[in-house]
Image (cartoon, rainbow, N blue to C red; front, side, top):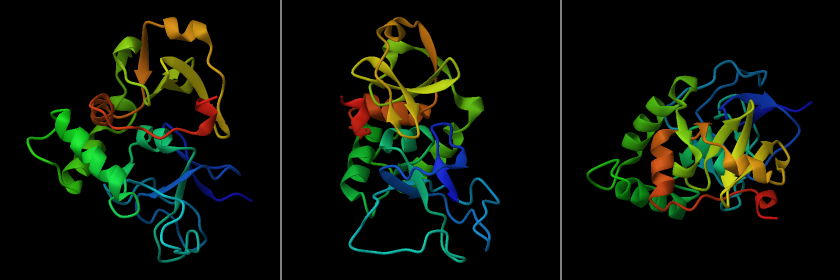
Length: 202
């Protein structure tokens, strides 16, 4: 049986048999029986590499953090996570510089400041409706109830296995509900290069 540690673009943690291409965490969310008992523990929501320096972990160990898995970085960012400063140090530094370039801080931001802002931007109450043409590639939006990735100026429907071929008619949409947090959208606009699942590239 799959563990409940896969995250969708809405930020929900579910049990499905697909690991994805990225790992992350929000602190320890599980109990001794590896059941999820809370949706968050820390403001520090990270998006991590699947492997790092040959380290091996027992997933959801009794005293460890809860290993979460995402289809790709675009999904993790939509769920409210940001690049890890250790295992994805280069990506984290690019994220900080783009955050600064976006005018989100007066100086190169510290992790705690980024985490506090993302915490305030997360959740259903912070999903604005925005004209599609104002959004950068790499964000996820909601269309007809489903999450979609905006990539190459087209909408690709998201699911646990990857992205579906774009429907050209969707590119004519006026406005969409944005799932990716506002500060992250601004950071992507300012040049942060989002990594997406290979199915978005075909």
